[in-house]
Image 1 (cartoon, rainbow, N blue to C red):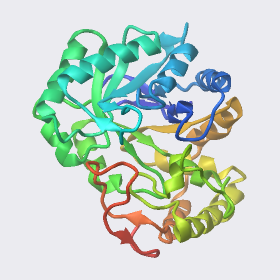
Image 2 (cartoon, rainbow, N blue to C red):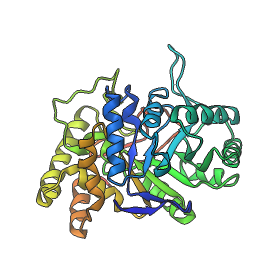
Image 3 (cartoon, one colour):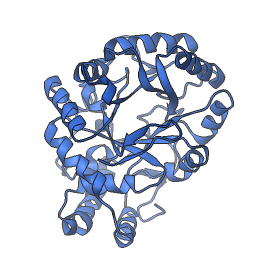
Image 4 (cartoon, rainbow, N blue to C red):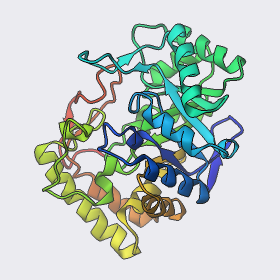
Length: 347
């Protein structure tokens, strides 16, 4: 495994991080907890030292599984969790955003209990909360750092303008945002700011939320009740919707045939190497349900794409359907927004 500076935290983070949203068991389909624990153990054996979870993943279930998996191994891991998103009561629409001081303090204690630890290495605000001043949020984060329960803090799904406002109250150590071949908005929206200010970047959705694994076909159907991809949208981009999905399957097949196949590697490894090729990225998060999936994914951390391969990839990606120009995190995460870029438009 390769390791990279985690912004200015002084930590060295594995190029591949273990993303634990699939362990929620409610939004990526069902999952067997024992297999999830084995997958985390396998990732640690391969040198992965970053595990990312959140209380919003399965109403705490993901944190419970992570806590179980890390018993006796806690000091070997950069443990990242989040706060500021609450699962609503039955019958109420959600999730609910709450980054108030009172809720942050409550959530931190609850997360530590589920994770079976006295501290987390990084605590992130999961989504921006328009009802709470950023200054209050950042002061609360500083408070939990001063208490010793958290080492470093940051934000997830924030824009550059939001981060700049937050930084007036307290330094942001880490940003987590979606970044993969089919969603390149952050290259122009937040990465330059992070590079300038030495903010570590965690990219999630590195495999296009599964689309870049090459495992889907036109017959693939996602159950909206158990799998968020069933609504056709991936964090504002309707890349899974109707004809967009069919077009993007063609894009994925071209990537497999023209890039992965000549290399003799799975497309997932090409997708991961592509994400890690951006100098702003500290770690690329990849979810896994089994040890075998861990093995298949992590090898991508060792690939280097040539200039010619990247040029070919850019040409192919121009045909992606369902891309949206701007990331607008104050809108619901699963709702499409903005104007779609026609296939063949700017990448």
